[in-house]
Amino acid sequence: MNTYELLLYIEIPSDSGHPESFRSALSDAGCEDIRFGDRGPRRVSLNLTLLGNTLAKAFEEAEAAIQSAVPNADIIGVIDLKDIDELADLGLQDSEGGEP
Image (cartoon, rainbow, N blue to C red; front, top):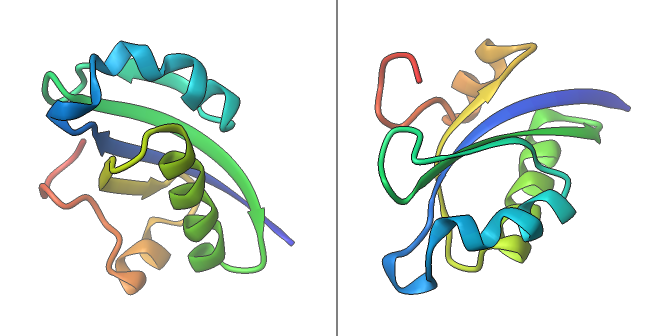
């Protein structure tokens, strides 16, 4: 099992209520260092530490955790804080280009 430390950027749909209202649900889903309004008014950056055999499996778990906390949220950027090259191989690098 490997440990993956992911920095994720999500966008909360406008019909989902105020982004801050999801703080508890994101925290309960294992998200840490939750910052609202980072890169836009409906955007949130957060950290997740996950165990998995592969980065792809860890990302699937991260996606499930996010969706359970904030239904219909879009993951718009991902950074593996340990191995950014593996993210590029999976096509999961920051969707906006440049540094987050």
